[in-house]
Length: 474
Image 1 (cartoon, helix red, strand yellow):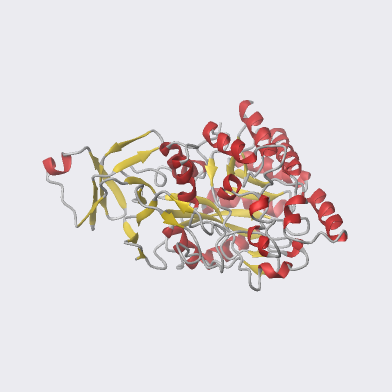
Image 2 (cartoon, rainbow, N blue to C red; image 1 turned 90 degrees about the vertical axis):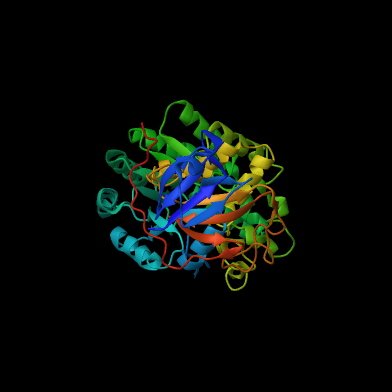
């Protein structure tokens, strides 16, 4: 098997950074050497990568993507091939996507459908969560079967989207009871969809149809209310593991922090758009341009009663927010977002971001919001531990998969449709952003997939990852 040696780099983990040389044999990290040991021990390799002045970090893990998702009368524009390739460009070596069971469908069959979409297509490794859109006795049995037999150990429910994915409180409670019994994690889209639909109908009746009203009709109070309700239901279900997805607002974060202070099995993620973007700079742009940034929960106003950005960055520092993911669900403006011309409620919900998460969070390090170690923890190590992939993923250590990113802190990255942009979407949500750092080299299980500003990987390299249970449960 081919051996690769990464020398002179600074290896970063959640607990620190140090100069270490890393030896890879085939797909696995097999040894790590203090400076001078490689020469002293006569270590040789087929390929030597010099990482002098660079950070050597675990490959990023994005635990919230939606490749090819059917939504709003169309499908997310990234396939598993194009989306996983774009992820690799961004230093991501594992994605966890969502298999979708809709009303009337069989849960296990829906997982098979997503396996068929992804098999032989991915540039990097992949795993699945399971969306359960119709909770009944058969679905609850399927949850147990998938957890015990298929390496799918997390299940997403929706308090939003009545008529599509929505579950009522009784259904949610039953699913949480099952999850608690088998040790699986419930992932929750926490917005009060019933109330939101009322506000949406009222806005459209008033002629308020522009994209900005997508945010105004999904107020942060209703995200906070739904988050509180989800936490109470998980408590009633016996402290069932609960992971709140894509937290956008201080209101929700306050509920999460209180639950964690009380020792509950409650965890949360946020996404880069909620750390950086405001309604005024995005959804409120003139004409229909704001449709580019329609996602749910929405980007929040800079003039809300809460300072959402500051609170979410603080939540990352205090670990009330454990992970940053992307909710990558891209739709082109032409023929997709345009379905909502004249009616914001018809705009497909989603943004493209899988390529830029590592970059945008590193800018948080540069800006003093996070430490270098916390960057690695939130983007690499905690996702692996939260969703049952550690220590094969999320760490550079002997025995781990050789998923490694070499990051150059001395070079800038300019994001934009004519700059760094490899997602299958006709615009960039992050147009004009400049990052003080750059993904230089990416290895997936020991194979170089990004090097010298070129994609050198291949479709089908990525393998399905069978996951265990969360390693954070009490």
